[in-house]
Image 1 (cartoon, rainbow, N blue to C red):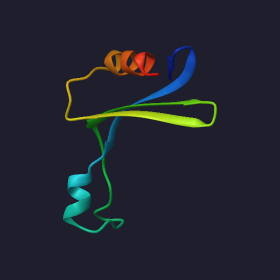
Image 2: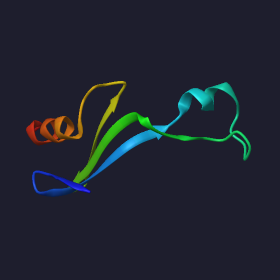
Image 3: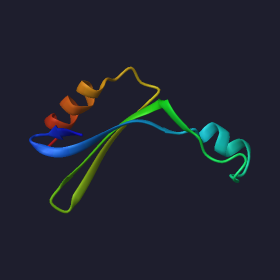
Image 4: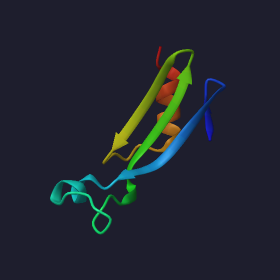
Length: 73
């Protein structure tokens, strides 16, 4: 948990390993795998709007994403 402009936000390290997903159809034996290095995600809600910043294959840090979110208007 973190904050964007004093609003609660969630910082997620990783995403599903989509490379594996596209190689074979998901099943109990070869299903999705979580990859902590795949991405960095920041999600927060303001009123009825949900915002998400998603950095994939990027050197962006959690602090970078929070700064981007706080500067967006």
